[in-house]
Image (cartoon, rainbow, N blue to C red; front, side):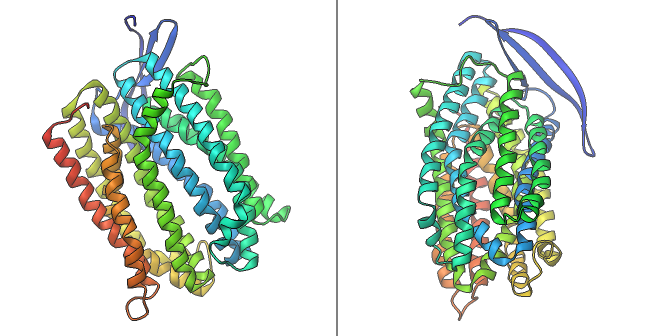
Length: 475
């Protein structure tokens, strides 16, 4: 492998929102006729770098949330049965996202490490391997979802009307997963390069298209929940096209087909703990939903609405999680231990502010948020209780999510996955006990979810700090 020549460094002034960012360091490295453009995360002010990375990732995450909110807003106009149908189908679509994370997380870890080490050849190979693996995984998941859609939906023992709508949404949404799989992967690859603005811009196009198409397909064409699904799939397809086209400004590979099974195995090994965590988390969610279904469609709809609102926290903190993961990944590859420690400390300070604000909003103003999506009194009352109880654990959830990003950055995703699997699984027996009529009824389910988040949010940071104090290794 020959030497590396740094060909150009560009200083780009920028301002994000109300926070002034002094510069963005873009380094273009030439090697044997190829190039790799990246944002250098191994030098400069840590807080400014984290914010410059986090804001566009937050923006992208909020745009993803808007996809769901727009669908829920218009589907909610059809009625609670339609909301329950979309919520039911979404469990299986989310399962696809969880499986996709096996490739996305593993690719993000390895690509950020080799970028930090300025190893262009291996960067290209990991990108090719991740794309090949991503396609194979998508096809393997989508086909069974479509073929067995009716059986999957029947698991919930829904009313006939709700069951039919859920099956239609699942089939259409399942087909669209091929686009979503690659959109997630390209976003993670670009974030590993330190580029978070491009995914935000591309996501903006999809959201605008979805906002335009949803009311047309749902009401003008009278396609109902099928229209909501079709609008989202079309928007995601446009996003995939833009990712493929625009990513060529950051990396060039001769082909996206790879036979490097060793690299695929390595990425899967790193991504499997988190994928398993997310798959089980989805399974736990389905089980919890089955418990909730005892209280009828209003309870199912209330939880779906509550989850959509709670995604405000998920998406906000996801920006910081993505930023700290990419930041630590590049610095880990460059061997900068002190910079890793300082980066994690500053990220935790930032996430404390986010957690406190969201807790206040959810606990004190839940009704205003819930009534945006539904007006039925029974559904509103249940959703308000959900928001207040879950709101008490938002700060701890933020700590857990950011720390998970830090663990991924150093290539150790197994630890937070084990913690999450253990304590998330305990939600089920806790929900069964606490939801008994002599205790808290339906609110007992919400309490079990909130308590597990508190425990995870305390334990994960304690273990990561212990790891940092013992010294960051590169095993």
